[in-house]
Image (cartoon, rainbow, N blue to C red; front, side, top):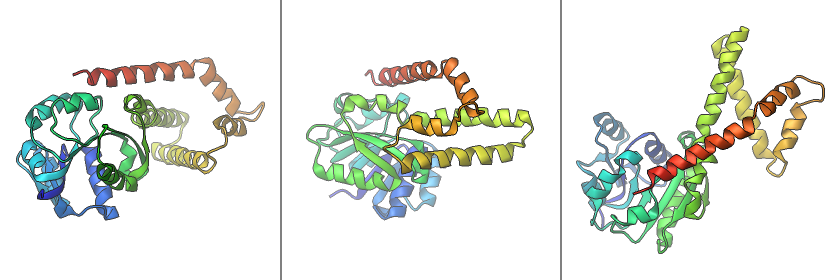
Length: 267
C-alpha cells in the first residue's frame, strides 16, 4: 500500500485549485496528499493548506497511489526523466501538449489520464476534457471524476481532441479577459471610472453566460438578435465586429493556439 492517496508534482495555480476544490468537497483529506514543487513559496502554500511536502518528484511518485502531473510543458522532459521506470499505480496529467504516447515512453503505469482543465476551476465554475489511455482502470477514471467534478463540468473525449480543446475552454478565458480589458479601457476613455466600468462589464459577462446556460437549446444567434434591435445601437456595433472580420481573427487565433499545443507535444 502507498503511504499517500494523491501526489502532486507541480503546485501551481491549476493544481492548487484542483486540490482546494477536492478538499472543500470532501473528496480527499489533506493528510492523504503529498506535494512536490521546486519553489519554496509554493511548498509553503501547500503546508498552509495542511499538505505534506516531498523532497523530490521521484519521492512523490514512489509514495503515492495516484500522481497528478501539473508542471509546465517546458519542464516536463526533466520530470519524465526523473520518473522513468518508477512503478506508479495511476497517473493524471494536466500538462499541455504531452500526449499519452509520449508520456508512456517514460512512465511505468497501466493507468494514465490526460486532462485539459481551465482556470475558472479556481472558483468551481470551470470545465475539463479528459482522455484515458487504453487499459486505464475504471477506478482511476472514477477517482479522476470525483477529484474534478466539484470544480465544474467534465467530458470524456478521444485524445485527438485534447489539444484542440484549448480553443473551446482552455485558452478562451484569456480571450474573454482580453475583450473585457478592451471594453474597460474604452469605457474609461468615455468618462466612466475604471472600478465602475469593470464591475458593470464583469457582471454583464457573467449574466450573459447564465442566460446562455439557462437556455442551452436556444441558438446563440437568437440571443444576439434579441439585443440587436433593427435600427438600434447594438446592431451598429455588431456590424463593425462582423465587417472587420472578427470571425476570421478568432479562427486564426485558434489555429495558432492549436499549433502551439501540438508543437509542445512533439517529443
